[in-house]
Amino acid sequence: MLDTLVEKEGCSVLYSHLGKVHSIEEPFTKETRKAFELLADYQNGKKILTTTTRRLLGYNRTVEELDFSVKYIGEETHIYLNTGYSWEDLNGLTWYVDDPELTRLYINGVEHNRIVINNKNDMEQASISIEWERLVFPKMDN
Image (cartoon, rainbow, N blue to C red):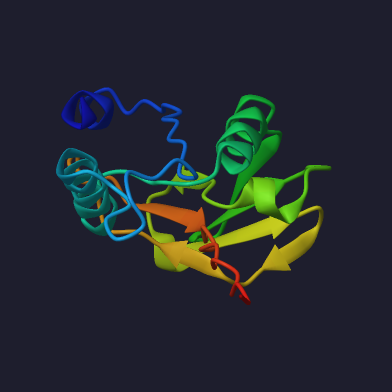
């Protein structure tokens, strides 16, 4: 299933009720652990992105309603993004560009200096992104 998701460049919401455990000593069955380990391998290999449902839906909405323009100034590419969405919903936005090193991104008229330059994809296309900020699991006090 994960290979198909990667191949089709799709997204999916997978639900797991983490509060229901098999036993306190071994909260997940062997099959469940193997599934989580496979998912982690895909995430660590940058084949897929795992995130919260809220972030996925916010990202997809932002992509559908994206309002940006591109201008070429000398050898530079300038991308102008106009949005009213929260910063969290902009995480991960990606643009294919000729030369990432000569690309500038402006968000609501202000230059964004934390552009991520991505590795070329399978079709040798260069791209830049707004960093996808990792969520940190909060510390739980007993």
